[in-house]
Image (cartoon, rainbow over all chains, first blue to last red; front, side):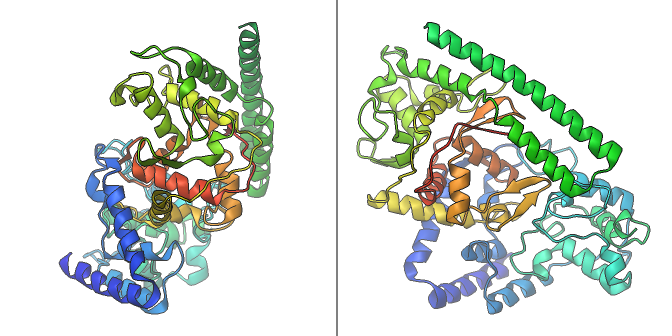
Length: 205
Length: 285
């Protein structure tokens, strides 16, 4: 964790020197200090969740918009290095479990049972199986994901990697880094990859 | 008192008819979805109709009436009412106060939102200690919140007035700037910030429309319709509750009631809503 933090600091200094005035940094650090005094730990949601890693820190500077190309490339490289593929080489699990994970919105909130299920909540932002009408639009439609892109090993690797760490492919993505941040297990990511990539999955029917 | 009783009865009648309308809509909706396999756009249309039907009667009136009683009653260790409370326009002036908040108060040397100022008055005028005054910031089933009732009353008197939040005092400017930064601050296991859901046009979570709070129109539409009676919870919810529950879903720790981050975000959004006509307490799903 040390070296990404140091490089983030270097990048941040670079960005603020080029793009914004020094006072912007002061406002940012005041806001961060304000956050620290405005929350209390509640169950699994401990105060260290307010501490940003390099990617979160950099992405917060662009107010929800895409960062400049050079910054984006640095963030993507930083995150691509974190993607860990399954050692058994098999990327596809059970799409039926994948569908359940895509539907499950619980997990990691202070109101959730820490021993209870943790889902991907994919439908909150994406269309997937056409049977589910209640889907969000923050992310693109993933209906026919495999059918449109082909079912080959490269696409499988892309799908798995994208779920594991979306910032490796699109800096400051709105999508959580499910593998990198330990939200979903390796098996769960395989199952969701199967939901996208199995020809028998309703996503591809 | 007779008027008050009538008003309450009217409120309960409206609440009952509302529940009927609501169940009919939900039934109709689920029948169509399962039996007719409606296209998704039609489901969205049905939800729009349901939302329109909700506007018929608003149980928020019950909170407004209780809040007015709480405002006028002699309460607390000092047995005084809140009628001497200065919400920014002078002691006892309620009408229009919410359209100016949050603002800097010299007596507290702090920028305060409505909820924080109410607690301040409960402490300084009525003699409550701070933890007592803050112990039930949000209602929960049988345990109703006095703060939410007071919020309903105070905000209701600003209905129809334009938002008019000033950034004059340096501490107001500082709070606004901090609010803008916090709005963009991404963190937690999901990397979420306010911007994840509220920085783009025309997006939804599941079927729930999301306002783009980075535009003037988006902030105006959203801010002027809180507080709101939430049908799904059977509670009137204050703006502090709105922020508290957003952060819960962001997987952040628990936002402290009356905290600076809460006030900073409120100031950021309230100021961006300037010029829009305040239209709450509203009613939402």
